[in-house]
Image (cartoon, rainbow, N blue to C red; front, side):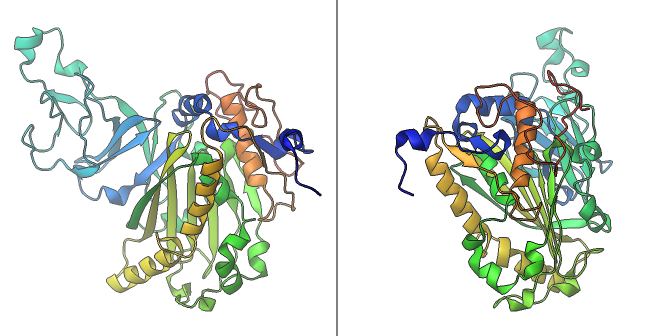
Length: 433
């Protein structure tokens, strides 16, 4: 067939609505703003791991949908989250990425969060405990009792992952939100405490959903050719996808032949509890997190959308807290051989989405992104993306194949997946049937 002219290029594909999306959902700034408001501010987001706050009064800051968040471990060992915003003049309470409030700062006392701008102080429960010149300045019109931080919903669940939701009105907890998608690895994550051993981040010029998409499908085998011909056998291709409420998908396990790698050793003796030796589960969660349990290590990717064409991806590696130094070093080697910043897998995926970002910059012409592969739910089936965009369409009230039109239910093509359910209290949306 000859190359297409402009009219042919712009023609809608001969596929059903759920089998392709319009590239404007990756590049349009107005759509991006709607996503922050309608999705990211309503969903449970796994922000970090509890081992990043190992001691009472430790803290870490983060961002959800442009809202600054501070997560702290209190003296009671409970982890809580607050908006990182002082109620006085809107200053960030703390601008450091992480640290401890155990010792005092020049502007405040020990064991308190202190806004350096005017010295307002807050305890680890978010209560305001000090307003300089409170009586002299406000004469009782503003008091400490009414000036606490904005508390956020926060749960520590599934192996110590810290989940935060900006919306108090969402009517499900973390377990309800995950809808069973993590049950395949729950026992492995919860058997004993986990600990982070690796962290790096990348800022990529592409839409956050493109990173989700490349994690969701395994059709790009040629990009990972060396992996595919060394460690994987037919069991790799025999894995199936399973869909869950709220847009989540997981992929079944198989046995990886690590002995075939030139620089790798067998991981069977370090396999996580309850996981068969050298096996691998992967979970893709709406709207932007990927959790892999692969033999001896857990990898967790968290996406933070920065603009329609920019995403920050944080990569964490986790092992067992009880590891000896020798065991921990092996886990780090196993993790970084595949998933480190110079590993044999991760950078290849990042090159792929960076190439998509080049073609889907804001104001670029609309393109048709095909997601119509049907292969019986096996890993080359693009059902994970279809399921994700069914949920995306419902939450956004936009048709993924034409975002200028309203959502139509039941876009996932074929009998293999039920229509995705939303959260029943989601504003403006119909309750899940």
